Length: 374
Image (cartoon, rainbow, N blue to C red; front, side, top):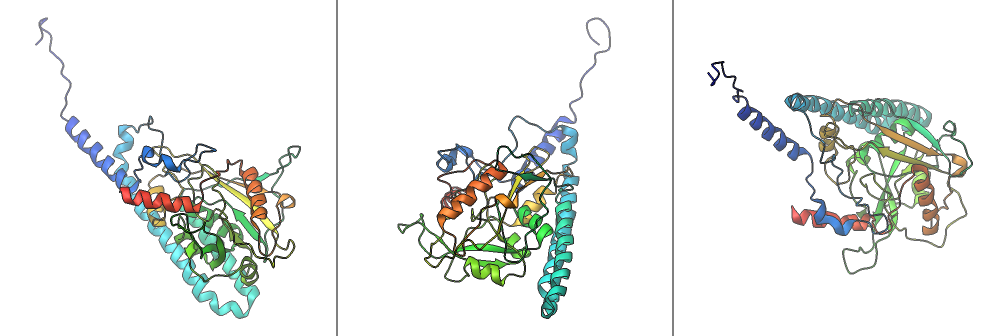
């Protein structure tokens, strides 16, 4: 009773301790699956020309919070993620077994192999994209000419001997390209020095042809340092369809284009022989309910897939394609000046800022420093 003789109402705090324990549990689970990156430690790897740090994992704005009812659903989202990630792994494994192993017997009949391989790869890749939250992927046509109007995407499609050039931020890039074109992916090989040593700057000397499954596993990694590999001309001729080249040579956080890896120039380059197709991938920014889809670090892609599939919300991926008539051509052994032209075309296609000092070698230094501070 209060001083007026009326019953005094009290606010029950019995649930307060349990709510705090739940919040601590949720926070600890999120920290285990989301990389914790203190930005101030990595200011050295902020590009001086753009002010962008292209290697840091993108996090939601610090001011955004998640309501308690949503937090109570977190245990169920982890169950959902486990189911979806398991399905993704099963589909990718089946794609590898069917296309890379079982369909090998059809190589004696190239048209049959190409048809079956493309059909199975397309279906498998699209199912994986749906499980990752990409239910609808808009495709836009781009033009570098200021007077050109936006139009439907050109009907011209890459074929054998053509080169698809794209920016690289995630294994999702690989899945989309596999879904649309069933290409062969090229991984860069470097056999010279590195900025991490006293030797000269490393150069891309050759490429390795890999399948969809291998390209996904290689997402976020750096160029291999070895003497094996093929020239771009040899790889494109040996491939059964178009080839995909990621000239940044590694993944970024999708905020800007990395400086292209320098190629080792040769003197036996022929006049323009390769037809190129320029494609840009841009992802939505992360929110507390929608983790980022980018994969800037060389960790297991299935860890990132698990994190992505904790959210049942739809994701956004905008694909922009440069009109084939405006795509620069490449000689049989591309020179760095040609790759600069490709970089300008890719930047214009996706409306990207280009970094001038951040390349795959800078990322190697970044990863070494990040590893030493963990």
